[in-house]
Image (cartoon, rainbow, N blue to C red; front, side, top):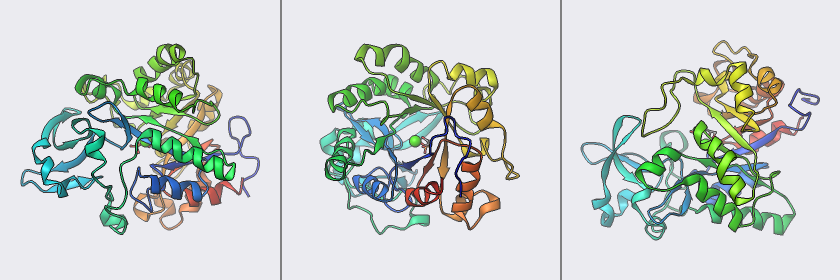
Amino acid sequence: NLAGLPTLRGQAPVVVGHRGSSGTRPEHTLESYRVAIEGGADFIEPDLVVTKDGVLIARHEPVIAVVDAAGKVTEATVDVASHPEFASRLTTKKLDGVDVRGYFAEDFTLAELKTMRAVERLPALRGRAYDSQFEVPTLAEVIALVKDVEARTGRKVGLYPETKHPTYMAQVAGRDVSQLLVDTLKKEGFTDPARVFIQSFETANLRDLKANIMPKAGVNLPLVQLVSSPDEAPYDWTAKGDARKYDALTTDAALRDIASYASGVGPYKRWIVDEKAQTTDFVTRAHAAGLLVHTWTMRNEPAYLLPAYKNDPEAEMRQFLRAGVDGLFTDFPATGAKVAAEY
Ligand code: G3P
Ligand code: CA
């Protein structure tokens, strides 16, 4: 029993369906979100990129298929390889200082993307049973799914969108992903602060949302600063970050600064349980700054579990809940909901 754990305000921890139920369905499809909700997710997570015609779609990256020098697709989230009519869209772009050859969402209209079907990003691990069945959804369609669940069952599932690479989107695609997000939430009437968290790795983007974009739109939604692993520089695909490592975002002073624009922090899970499987003081320090802590990513597959929990994803989740986290992002929300129900 996990009752009485030290969450920020004594509230039960939330389970976020990471890219839907991406451990069991191709990520970022309505089917993946539907299964996540059915499994008990409190929130579903769409990562957001922009189409050529300025529509937000649920994808993890602007690059939707990576192609090697021989023309072979090496990683993809859509079946663009089976669309010869789009061969001319193959291009090379610099991402984080590295040339990436592939197909990019911002080079396709929504109508073109709607002709493609989602494929499993990790087929070696998760198989291809659900390949080429499901469309790429827009953010508006994801919101419609959540509203439909509420209309049918009364259950108020929340939305946890991530603005993906907003600096890249502004400079390479000429689109303001955060403005589009707030506009879409407003247009769809989905602005209840109890049902939305907006997350980003880019600090400047969150500050802009807090100081400019949300006030001008008359909405005030809780923001979450993502914090990646200590050996990565903050994301900004156009400028290679600002050379500051993520550990600079985890000092007490930095956490207090995050609390000036965000309601929570979303740390990579090793900030909370270290390489020796010891719980760190991260949650205590973030809570002292007044920040919720929503950590990522819980997965059931042994390859992704902390060494101490090789065959027991539920035990791994319990260690994070005992540490006092306020929420877990998981590819297997049904497992997360089962464990969180012990709270
Ligand atoms: O948003 C939390 C987590 O999803 C961040 O990592 O790369 O899966 O978007 P990523
Ligand atoms: Ca994400």
